[in-house]
Image 1: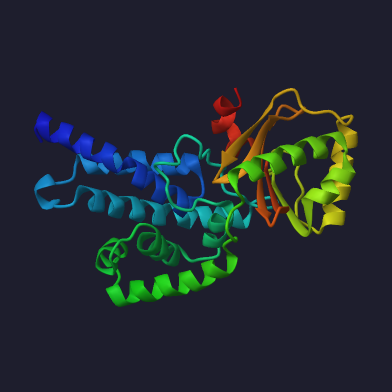
Image 2: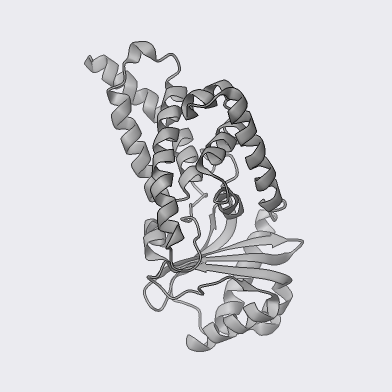
Length: 293
């Protein structure tokens, strides 16, 4: 392979990279694993016979999909023994929104977790990335009809679990900052107004940080948890915290008193908070340290 071929190949990969990362992140739910997959895909791309490749992006998407499917086999085993609730790694969507112009919400990623790896791949490639069933069949080593059935089954499952239309960005920021201040200062009256009656809180410590092992359902139960946290930290705000957007949701990053970098994301419906996602596993928030600074 000539130097020119290598340069053209690198340029083609860099052009496709945002799309490849978007696919790998949705498939795996982790930023670090998606980055590893892209490194492997690039190495394979460097040795691919260029004369046989008519569509570099499509070829790279097939490589990435197959690598993700292999990764999902071991990921499923790990998640069966995962301590407590599992949440996807938070993805900062302030600077990369133009590259990830499709849904990366936590609700979608959790819905994808209910699918088989093949269902997940067929659904994402067709419904999110507009691939034809013929191309999907090549990527998955299945027939087009089989891939159509996989995508249809996945679509039915996902539609039941995806959230309603997201909150207005300005309203989302206002409610998120009010929630964070109230939850840390013990302002129960404000929290009561902000939380929906059927609010749910899911926290992920991964066995490496304090977190609720099971989801917490209902406003009264969430309020009791928040009251306990506020008392523990003397009803004061952490020294380091900031508003941001994670996975398209309004969120807060903060340095907790125990040194853990914590990410809290909110789903808001009709002006009330309906879902609270708290990620405290340090393996899942480490990549966000620069965003807090």
